[in-house]
Length: 178
Image 1: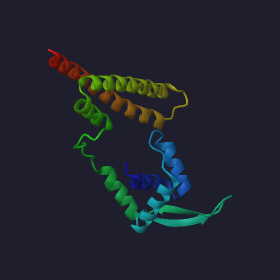
Image 2: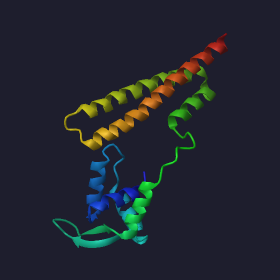
Image 3: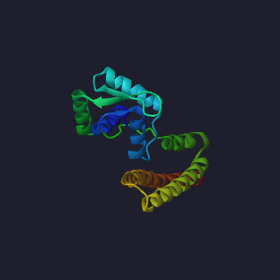
Image 4: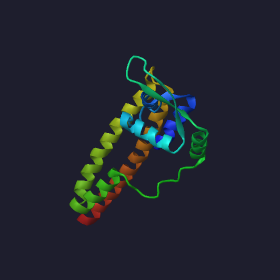
């Protein structure tokens, strides 16, 4: 995820200060990793330096002085360009899950890999159930449901891979024993 582009998108609604942007991010991307305030302000500083946002005012409503930022025309163009670009499929497998299976096969053999695959499949299944429950909760927002659907699709793909790999490892183990 590109934090700078997400902040540009949030600024389409109008000028906001860092606290409002962090809150809007965390509400609208409910299953994403929450942004740290420092990350928001550092990103705003870079966006301002690059001419993509500009300071639009300051207020001190019941607290410290806050600087509001607004999207510039260049920022709007940059956002439109980013939104129009198709994301290339990941060229490499860089999952910790994949790495652990391969390393367990190399370091400990098929029994350790089998144990790991079974335990990981159980953890994925539990998380899948949790996310399915989120979708059926009456207070779930559209963002909650979309985020849960996204995570469920990825968990489902992982579960299919885990099952296929488990079967392959068991077959490999049988060949080694025979």
